[in-house]
Image 1 (cartoon, one colour):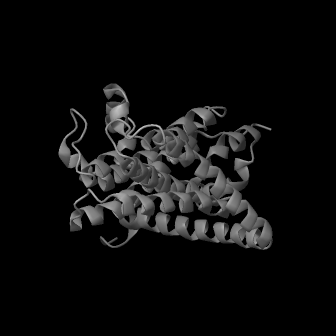
Image 2 (image 1 turned 90 degrees about the vertical axis):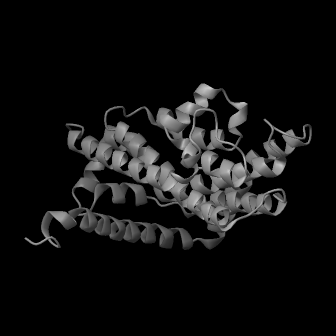
Image 3 (image 1 turned 90 degrees about the horizontal axis):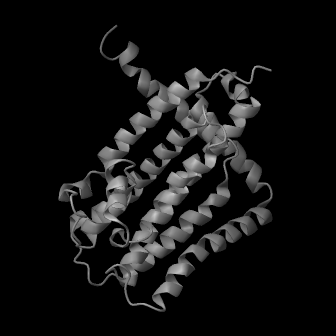
Length: 282
C-alpha cells in the first residue's frame, strides 16, 4: 500500500468518522431540545444567570479593594473571561463525559459498544445540552467588557492573535482533561467528583491571578496538570506581565503544542480504558 493509503491514514479516518458520529448524535439532541423552545430559552437564561453569580463575587470583592494580587479589576475580568469561555466551549462539547462512571457501573456503556461508530463520540454527544451556551455567553460578555476596560495594554498584532488562540487552545486542553478524567472512570466509577476538581475546579482557579496562589501550586498547574496554558501564561504576556518564577517566557506561546500533547495523552488513556472494560457481568 502506498503512503497515501492503509495504516498511515487510519487516525484521520477515525477522526472524520468520530466527528460525523458526534455531529449526528448532537443534532438529534438539539432538535429534541428545540421542540420546546420556550422551555429551552428559560433554561438557557437561568443557566446564564447562575453562572453570572460567579462573577458577582469578583464584583463584590472589587467593591472593597482596588486590586487583587497586584491585578486590576479589568485584568482579573480578562482572566475570568478567557477561562470561562474556554471552559464553556469544552463543557458544551464534552460535558456528558462525567456520566461515564454511571455508564460503566450499570453497564449502559454496552449500548454504545454495539453501534458501529466511535464510542467516545457517542458518549460525548449523548444528551447534548444546548443550555450550556449560557456559560459561553457569560464568559464572552465578561471578556469583551474586560477588553474595553484594558486601556493600559499596548495591543500588538501578536497579542490580538493570541487571544483567540488562547480560547481555542484552552478549550482543547479542558476537553482533553475531561476525556482523561472519563478514562479514569473505567477503573474508578465513583471518582467523578475527583476528576471534576481538575475541570470545574481548574476553571475556578484560573479565574484569579496566579500571584495570589503559592508558587508550588502555580508550578503544579504548569508542569503537572498544564491548566496554566489555558489562560494564565498567554494572558500574562497579553497584559504585559512577567511569567511566574521558574517558568520560561516562551511558554506564553506554547498553548497549541500543549493542547496537542494533552489530546495525545487523553486519546491513549481512553483507548486503554476502553480495552479494559469488561461490562457488568450481568
